[in-house]
Image (cartoon, rainbow, N blue to C red; front, side):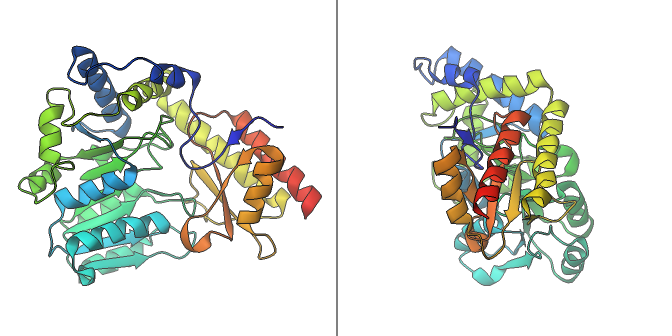
Length: 363
């Protein structure tokens, strides 16, 4: 049996140093040891994401982080624009619709399948309508599309005063992010994808404008930004955190900075090139169109004669290669090979070799 090659979009493989860090005995989350841990992780997260603003750590999934951002920053009655490029953009939109309690207050700008948001369509819409907030999914992992976040934010800033809420769940750690320089108001990510750490935390950063909007928000206790920020000033979380997740994230961030962020991002670009270059040999195509193909996941477009779910099972059973069909509408037409988390280019070469072997024998 082949060694497991975990090429799903999360949770992603963990480095030995991360596993070792997670295996340590528990400490009090009010101790000086945890405060030092908190400060270390907060510092490195901010450096990675290009921001001076404090990190809000929530013990929940990325979906919880999206919901927290919406509940703290948006108000019933706000008008919101969702830049819709796939399943996770729709998830962000649905969370927002429920909070606004008025579906007509949320407008979706749909992209063509496999394409990023159309800048001209965005500009025209912003010229016709005013919005209180815009939702952006940086890396739409369901379709393998990386939205040009800096360019889209520039357009929005030129035509609107809207707050920018960015889902960076599957982009952080795979591609450069400069939150403050680009003008993103709220950014949400998680450890278990590009940051190659265990699941169990949501990471949220809100700038001054978003923090001001969050003051007085009618939000539940657990997701209250003000409460989290107050505790964060003492290097603590309001409630008991996942200490093992903090330790794993500290170790993974140290590995990323030791490798060098430019080198990390180039490794992801090289992995994308390996996958994209192999598609023609496999007789397959890329669902995401150039130049918007994600550096963290390759979405393979399959012909009608090949079921993504059948192909997934065959690769698992015969090669221990774990890929995943697309989420949502394209789940039987698209298979995704992730290149994020702890991986080497040899891991990607091996995944492609398994795909080639199976295609040659089966199709």
